[in-house]
Each structure stands twice: as structure tokens, then as C-alpha cells.
Image (cartoon, rainbow, N blue to C red):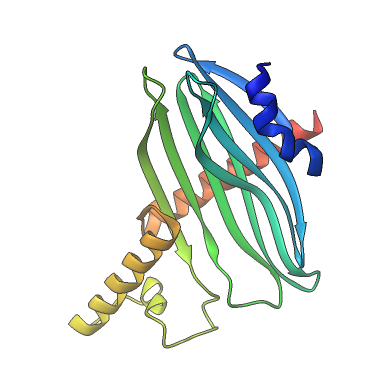
Length: 201
């Protein structure tokens, strides 16, 4: 491991015990750093993906929350993530859910597909998502209601379009509906299950 790389990571190593994984793809060096956090009422793990440059600097490419639980045992938001690397393709899976009597947090899923190009740069090929920003019963006047009841008027359609645009901007992806949304959630849950099975091996 290069000296400059160790100097860069020294502050991280002093304050936590991250897991570090090295990858070589297209003759480029990448590092996955997985760390835990416990801040106020939030606990979890996050992975950060870096590319090593020719001058040994590290360029942060993306991060993924692997797990996050925020709130109390009786009411908390939950986020789970998983990543899979196949050759030069990286798939990121994210699932948002609720536990207990909590209604104003998201439920949904997202899949992001990245490709590492021959020069080591990262290209986002696809990002699909479906997100309900709160429980169906939480705000019955929200345009989110049109995910469950088809819009009837032009005003309803514009309200739904505004909701979708807002979610796409916040969660960074292309909103999908109906059976495509069901298939997306099923695929993400299957990926999370694979993660749990791998942890028990």
C-alpha cells in the first residue's frame, strides 16, 4: 500500500476502524472504504468508492448507505443498501422502509447501474426508482395520492408530474410506475437478501 494513500487515510484510521478493499479495473486502482457511524439517533454503515490518481491522490466517485436506522425502536426509518461488482459494471441497490408507528419517512427502492470506462472514469448507465415520500395515510392531500388513484383532471396530472420531478431530483433517478415499480422493489429486496446470506457465510 502506497505511503501517500496511508497518509490520506490516517485521519479516518485514527477515529474509526474502516474496512478497506482494493480493486483493479482496466488497469486503474479503486478503493472501497466501509465505515460505521453512530450519531444522535442514527446508526449505520456507509461505503465510499474512490479512484486512485496518478499522483496518488484519491478521487471520491460515489457513496452508498449500506444500512441506516434513525429513530427509536418503536418508530424509525430504515435504509438498506447493497452493491455488486461484475467486471467493470457496478450495481447499487437501495431500499427505504419504515418500522413501527412512523409515517413521514420514505418507502421505496432504487437501482443505479454504473460502468467503469477504460480510462477509469465512471458512467451512470441507469438509475431507476420508486419512492413514496410518506405513508399513504399521512398526508391525504399530497400529490403522492395519485400513485394509488389515477389523476382525473389536468390539475391532478400536473400535481403528479410535480411530485415525480421532485422525487427524481431528491433521490437521483428515473421514476417508474405500476408493474415496473413492483419488479424494481422485488429486485432490490432480492439483492438485500443476497447481502444477508453472504454475511452469514
